[in-house]
Length: 113
Image (cartoon, rainbow, N blue to C red; front, side):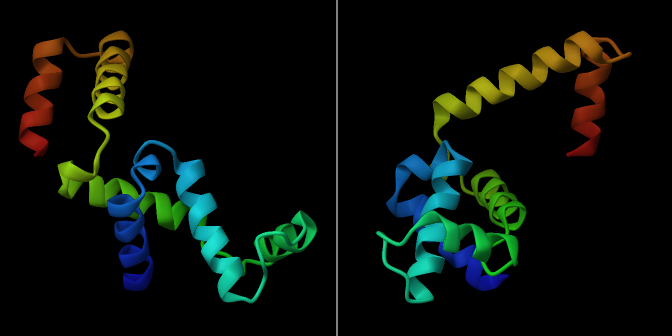
């Protein structure tokens, strides 16, 4: 898992487009995986899908979970526009669906962190 964390961190630092899209992040990771197995970029998609199906490629959930944790711990690895949009969407969702008032939600959140 540490190796994957280092890979994700390296991509977040060197490829800013991976900060805003899990699809782009995983495309970069899986391209590296395929190249490490000796496949060229021009190789067809059927062998790729077989490798994915058999679990030979990096797990999507593991990589994206690591990305979220790294971005939470290292704000400089975030895209601030996307971060603020997601934060606002979360607040809107809480306001709409929470059985508690905004003040109660704020108090709960403060106690949690």
